[in-house]
Length: 338
Image (cartoon, rainbow, N blue to C red):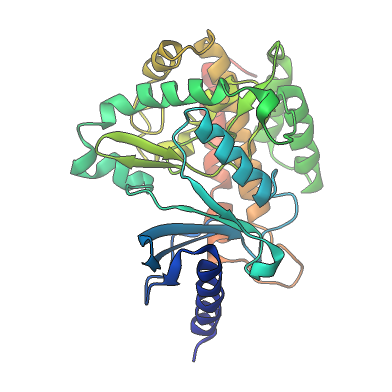
């Protein structure tokens, strides 16, 4: 028996016991499946049967190879945040259970499984999304306006992170790896020289709102996923992050997620009550986001612990450092940076 099969069998037994305790029935035979893995999170799909009909569920939990500092929020805080955002009208999966120590499944949560596509390249290319693609940028703008309208007073404890703080944090990370990139140095200097004023009141920022973290159906965006980087800050950060070139997945002429324009996204944002945000502020956060992603790639290229192998997921991300340098050069050249 392989180590993978043994690990899956042990996981299945623990999940089955949990589902019984929750009154959801039993784990459906052969339904447990690990979905496309992230670098710091595992996502598992499975069905519960024998209780209130068939219950289709997802388990998100922290990966064993996640390095300290690669997440901002605990799994418990993320789950509570998703619940709060959903209660305020943001399309999110319903949280069914937050994992407890007695569940012996690690740190994470169970949520409902929503039908739809998350793989960005399929969203951008498959014919079933052809009709909705031209409207996705506008729809993303409306969703972001709803996220940013969630009252901070009702949220679980979140860090506050504006541009200046993020730049300082990123530069410390850059120096910890020994520096050495003329492109990153130029980006840091330009970003410091053009730092926007802090918002008068910090808003809820998703932190990773992009193509690939959305469940999309032929009718549009059905749910927003992956809230572990959420914080309070400048709402323009989310609007800039989705325009980072890496999140266009080859469709580079469509600045928003590979499917639309910044103008359409901002029109959707305003239509749902979002505050006035100009294109220049979006460009600033695109630049900071590209730099941030480049440093994440650099970190992923390193093993979590000395003498341990790098996982395939981390290696695939780590090799993309040079892509982010090219993206930054394109942005800074257009801005006239020297």
